[in-house]
Image 1 (cartoon, rainbow, N blue to C red):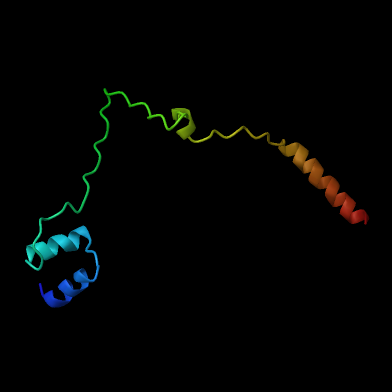
Image 2 (cartoon, rainbow, N blue to C red):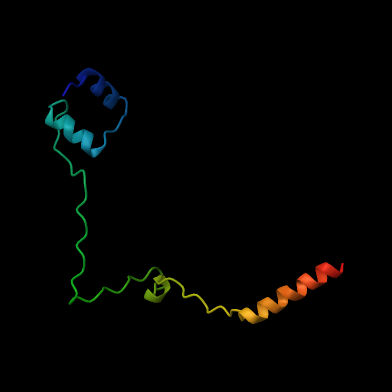
Length: 99
């Protein structure tokens, strides 16, 4: 890997901050002397079926309830009978013709 050490050191000296991955590359190539840092976080393990879910921690005086995080259920919508719609459309067409 071809790195311009003088430019890297210059930018770091004026306040540039490296990402964890770039920092580790610079440490590996001995551009800077420091310890490597963790550049990624391990994925959370899924809960086992036998284990219970933890209750949410209270926030201030209010407590978050599990029901509030579930998506809202849609209310049933009443649909018009196809016959009623056909009659209403037929009446509208008659009114248009008479005008």
